[in-house]
Image (cartoon, rainbow, N blue to C red):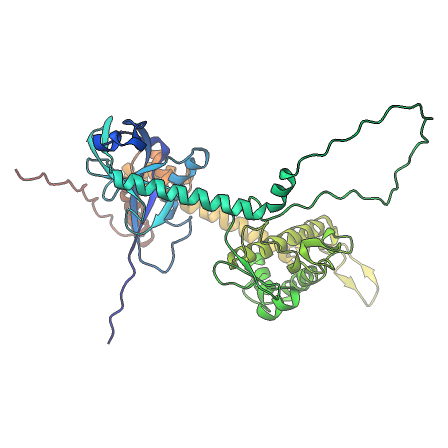
Length: 466
């Protein structure tokens, strides 16, 4: 039997910008004495700190709302407004900067997978003490870094030259001198009225200029192919053939339904019609829109990979979900403004005597008994009332049995995630996890009406033997 090999890839991420360090770069004397390096002297460089976070054992990284990615994104959020330095200091174990840490040339990424230095030049290792860190620079790595930067600049220049050849030809042409005519008296010109049907078109712009999204290609048949190999459908018919239940599943998820009922079918048909036929006055129907000679006729044809920053499957699905959500919100807003479609409305003359043709005005009791909306609303309020009573009883139980963990309940009520609750209490996440485990133990004892065990003492780290 073959043994299964578990994937284990280290994940690194930048720490908060407040933890940036100032490094004293020291070049060798032989490097400074060279003719091409005569102008370089030792100087200071600011470097960010990148540290090991966790080992990735699954097929892909978890969502940002799941630990430990939640902690990573919380630390990376301040970098959106701060430029990333040219160098980083790598911390493999722990969160304390010590001598011997690697200094790596950086390219602006905030997190990545793999083992340091990730194919980048390692400038050297730090030495000294906090506040006066020094780095003995390796001249070979500096030469490799300069070569990589020169290659990158040359590639950008070649790309810019290919994208704007016409502009260079226009700039290279010398302007011809224009003869100045001798002014002669002329009669006043007649007023000129602009034609209403005349439309002044702006000069077309090349979408490939300043494009910073994912790489994609375009086949001879017109299909866009993303960097992940996904082929974008050309029109709605091809999209429906490949994903016949895409809109149906989207509606079920939006309405929180586990089965197909009349409401789900109505929403699905309305959204399919919206995706299949563009409005007659849509700007995408004009000839030449989105690169199509006859214009677009459905929503799928309006997909533009330059505007969506790529043609991968996740970019395409995001665009489709965005179009569906816009139409769904518009239709739902119109339905809410229509009194006939409100779920709380019922007929007050439902109890009719057909034999005599009399209409009897119903009482409030009849309305509540025959209205599903009011019944569900009453049940929901009753459940909220019972939950509030249960929570208050548990609070009194915690105050009586173990008052030391009662502030954890207040922190959880005031905040949401565990990290914010720990900051609210002013403790570390490890200490707050201990409070949370104790609350879970008290909750089981409260439900089962059993005796509460004693709280364990905190573990103390053993001292290092001399």
